[in-house]
Amino acid sequence: MKFNAGDSVDGDHCTVLIHEIFRCDDSFKEFSRCAEQMIMQGQTREISYRTYNAYTSFIHHLYEFLMGCHARDAGNTEITNKKGEERIKIIEGYVMHHAQRIMDQYRDAIKNGTAPSWVNHISCYDVTVPAEFAKDFREFRNKAVGHVAHERASSLSLSDFYHKYHKYLYLLYRNQLIGGVSEVKNFLT
Image: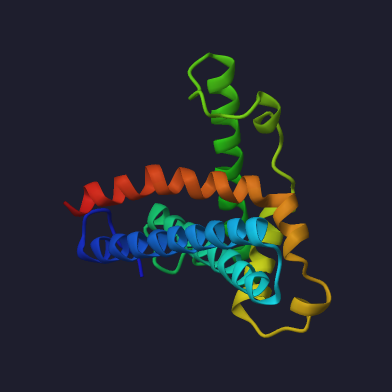
């Protein structure tokens, strides 16, 4: 359904976006708590399961939030009027654009001396987001969270996914949590 900024559908959509980013935030905080417990107390099956579950929940809610942001940007609750591969390409393009935009913003802030003191070395940000990031993000979200699929046990490694993509996921999350939520909250007040 098409909608305009400020109408009732947009208001409802913003409410759901806030709910989704808060669910993402809850999942990330649970992941952090479980990961700390795993480091401090050692790895057990139970804590490994809880850590896995929290991180896949974080992936799921972050992806859903980003798709919801795309829908709002497009003014269309159906996200795109395209189907199948064309729809996937549009959504993955949206994710890639924002991931690269965030990396570039940090790199540029470091270069011009306006970066916060807590940011990492420029080498962390002066990179091109891997071309397969959005595809792998979508596929991991679908198989690890959304579907009962044998690939979850046979070919998906959360550890590999984490090592390859966590910095991009974390920066998307942090950027949305700080910027996206305050923008949506301002709209609702």
